[in-house]
Length: 265
Image (cartoon, rainbow, N blue to C red; front, side, top):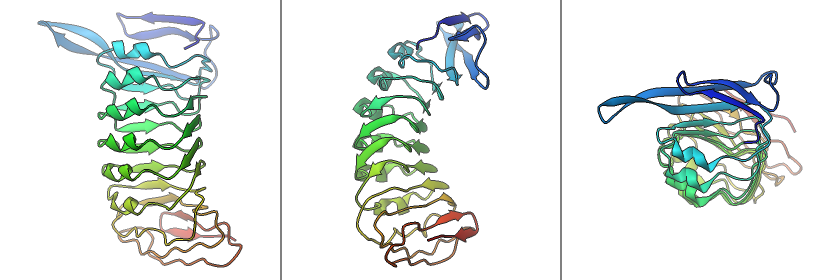
């Protein structure tokens, strides 16, 4: 991954030195977690989680991580990693991948859809492009999907309707187009959603009455088209209101927060 310094104590499962300099960058975080597993009547220590955040690492994601057969969590946020997600990772039983704020690019490998054990996937603030791959809909255990601040284009695939365990969905700051899909109203477990910067024609925003637990962190700039139409009544302990905005030139629509609604034109 481009580290100049690397020293790991396998007996204690501790990183002693890592990075481009002997001293870690300010604000960096590192941690490796190991657990004991029973193998052939003996216990063996295996890595289950790796976190290297904020080390400015300039390399690529290592496909060799699949050799850590018990690895579940990967967090390489806030580095300068390039390339893409290794297709080899599809053979691992990962539950969490975060590559937030790197320089990864290209299309999301279709093999990622094979990691059905994933519950958390954060690809925010990279340079991924292409369409949002339909195979992400195969990640049926996914609870968090964050694809914000990339270069995705096209429509959101209808296969995402199968992600019924989602609690957090963020797709803002891309180049997406087409309608906001009706199937989002069926994500009944959703508590956080961020959608913006979608180019398309005027439509009614999908009914959200089934999302009884959602906290509207941010739903802004839904539609770049100046004619926006949103009518919804959200049940539960969230916003109860109905909105209409069809005035020409109305480019900002709303910024909604829990039990609070305000807007600007």
